[in-house]
Image 1 (cartoon, rainbow, N blue to C red):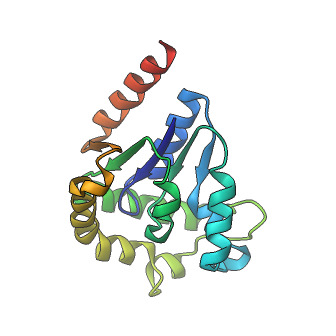
Image 2 (image 1 turned 30 degrees about the vertical axis):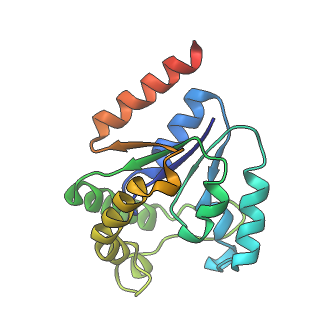
Length: 180
């Protein structure tokens, strides 16, 4: 089984992906971990594509993240796209809470990178995750609706989840199906 969890920043993609991977006993592949280098360095497309190809070479996986430019690689063999489409208020709240928690706790986000969120980066820079969530929420909804309707992707099962309750029920249902 190959699953890509998509959604706006702060929607809970990583959390749901980790839950799915644990319940299905398959690898979780975090796109941000593949992309971000030490000291917030960004991977080139070539580096990212190579890392994604390598990470997804296993038989089963759950990955999170949008990274539109990696879509042809991820969706080449994907079985299911799970779209976390929570309300703007919920998504913004989750992004805000995550930014505050990460900035306050100062834990390294991806081991070996030294990357830590700061209040300055999260709230007072043009790279702010809060600003990114505000800017991309509406456009992402339009983009994901169009992708679901695109005939080129009709072979992929799209799952559209609108609430955390639906997400938890989905995890339970998929885990139960996997046991059969």
